[in-house]
Length: 311
Image 1: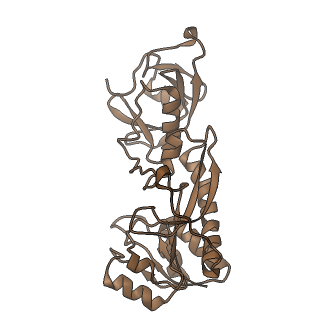
Image 2 (image 1 turned 90 degrees about the horizontal axis):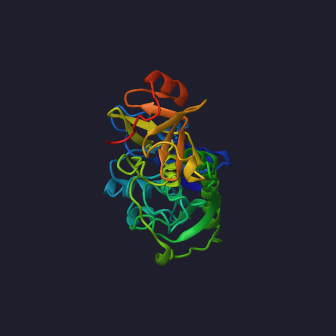
């Protein structure tokens, strides 16, 4: 089949290579222009190395974008990690239309941080959806879905790189085959089950130690590696990545006050929250690099009773 890929970075590159590996013809690649000083777009680089036409336009809503896609005359369009808005006039040009990847079980978790939010909320399952793009964000009819379990220690990184990334590449191949063959079904999303969440960024990733230890544990997991859950240490931003959760089982087991360092362990240090302690294993202090928490605690002179967070 003749394919046009719209996407960017690692995921877009993997999708490009997957179609090429099975001898499909990729007639063009649309990717957003790179910002000055940004790392090279891996999809763009891979496409150019393979002699595939690359189109970088500031918008897919322009007459130029429409004209170029018509000239390419693809059988199907494949949207793989797309942050640019693609209007219906654009996505309807391929003979069999366009399909899009989204890393959640739509209609739940529409929006740009759909991998973070299920983990932040303590869900035990997430997944991916291949759907038809419409003018509504992540609102088009569903072609196929694949479910992924979320383990109690899973992070954004493990859920994405171990599951949603590789499964997503294969799901786009599977859906493209079904659509071109005319064997697929399209199911309208149930609005009664729908949710939209915005970006998970600095404001959303701040740790509030007065919350329950399970809520904090889920927040840190859901923000690891990005954007990185954070607190304050001596007025500096301290990002916390790898952690363990320890529950208080009895009143007598409680150590320290909420938000205080309540011990140093072989691998890190403990911070008290409601209902338990967070054992911090890997951190990054503002202006520094990611390091293991035990040597960090020694270097910074962390001790019991020191407080984290805003005073």
